[in-house]
Length: 60
Length: 192
Image (cartoon, rainbow over all chains, first blue to last red; front, side, top):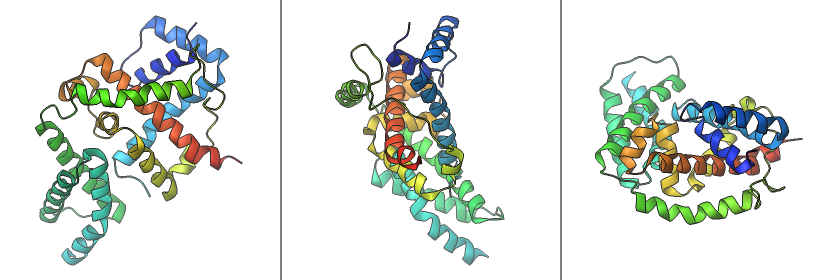
């Protein structure tokens, strides 16, 4: 079973490279039992969306 | 019209400069990039419907200038200088995770209420910028190359002279730090 520390590493890397099958499965299992990491994963997408807007000059 | 264009440009100058400084972390280089952007903007003859579309266009020119600057620096973010950031990395990991690698109670990510609504608030972007600025300099630079300038990790490795796996570690470190900072300084306070 992945630890949260390992899971966060994979959640970062999935922003930069396609994960392998074993990595994806490990992550999915971890998500089932860990709400903190589920939040973290959603927040990675929020970070990317925020960076898109900021980097594009599209901020109020 | 030209006069308006000029005054709009002057009004947006501080925004451009902040954007460039954040990424280049070098006041002189940032100043140069903005200067070149303004020159390019004045000779362009595009028409814009709003100030925000004008700003978006300016930022896209500036982004290219920043990319040029980064490419012309040779191995600006050297592997040895990234090592300077690593002392902070252990500290970060120790505060966030316990010995078994689980989130500590204080650091466990909570739910973020309506991020889209936050994006509409100027104050959110001030916090966002402050959090970026708070990251270790080289870590931030690698992160911004990836997220603002759209470099692929391979290219970042090459420019920075680091290995791919090192690059992932640096990006991960940046995301951990930025996420914590945003939660502490924005989302935790925004929850009701």
